[in-house]
Image (tube, rainbow, N blue to C red; front, side, top):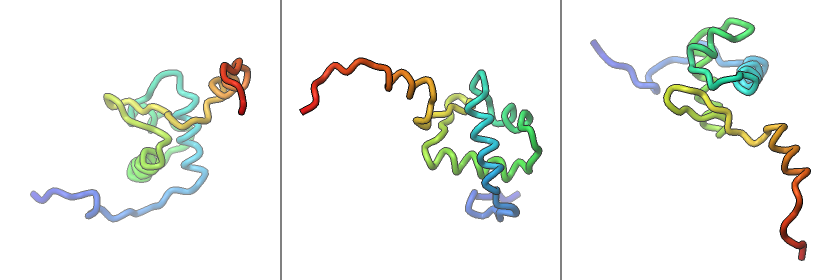
Length: 96
C-alpha cells in the first residue's frame, strides 16, 4: 500500500470566499476552542472535508489560526474586546 504526500493529492474543489469567511466566523464565535471535526460538523453549511482542510491550512499559513493539542485557536489580531481595551488604555509614555 502506497502512502500519499500532501503534494501528491489533487485538489478537487477550491474554496470560495464565503466558505472561508464562514469558517473564520465559526472559529471566532465559538465559546471553546474546537477540534477540526467539531468545527466541521458545526458549520451552518456543509462542505467537503478536503475543502475544509484546505481552508484551515490557508488560515494557519496566513497566521490567523494555530493548532494546539488538536484544538483550533484564533490568533489574528482583530479581537474587538482587545481593541477596545487598547483604545481605552492610559498611556504610560510620552510622545516625542
